[in-house]
Image (cartoon, rainbow, N blue to C red; front, side, top):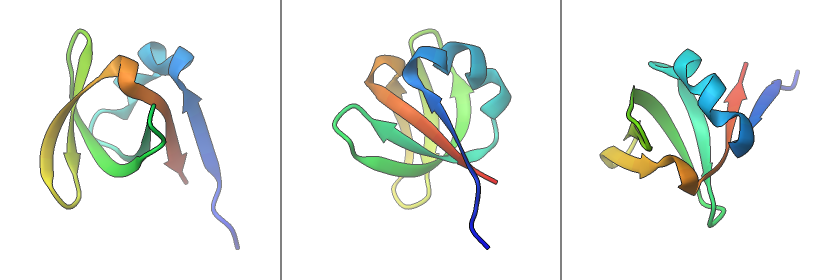
Length: 71
């Protein structure tokens, strides 16, 4: 059986991010690279994430293309 995906485009990011704190998801950046991350903190213009391989990173919100949730 396949998994369902819910995609959050960059335009809806500000209204949906608060619901994602502490959750794991796939983050797709503007340069089409993707990362499986856990959202740790939301700041004014950037987010703090934990990559499952390399550790913690800060990414500007305007560099995010979309967020993909699996459920």
